[in-house]
View 1 (cartoon, rainbow, N blue to C red):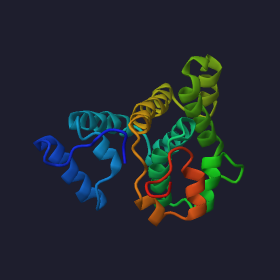
View 2: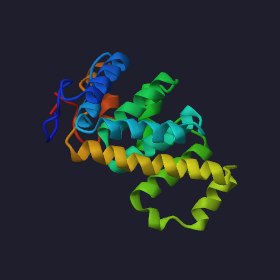
View 3: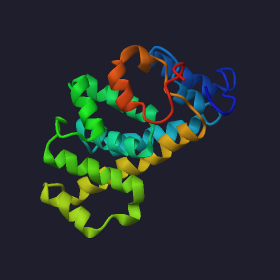
View 4: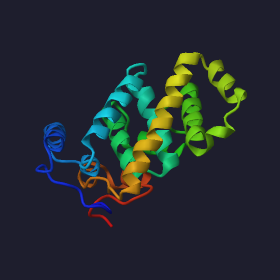
Length: 197
């Protein structure tokens, strides 16, 4: 499951509480929570930071930015997790695959394509961002505050995706059970899903 031993719920009260809350939410204990089992307070603070960033964005915008960042990071776990959210929000399998692949048939508008490209560039090389990149977003009607939010959502994905991949946390087997096999190929672009190695 991971490159390090992950503690069980008996490790301490905070770990037990985190695991119990995750199991209640997901119906199983996701590997991402196990990966933070040694430091549950880090997961708690991560959740608070993420909540503060997401609170200023629509769910769709946040998920599209996150998907673009996760793709650039080659994070299967985050692609699968956030792709699953987009499916629940109305994307079809084909529409999500096209969005993940950057295809012309993706069900996104020009502004959404622009924020996804910007998010990918932030992750790939933030030093390459120029005033022209920001001005291009403004031409799509994005305010300075919205551009901050988009940048923040892309930047924080680097922390979480790299933590999971650096510790060897495989995407949960639940994704193999719930997602169409062809869609999984579009989303699982890094580490394979647990049990599908």
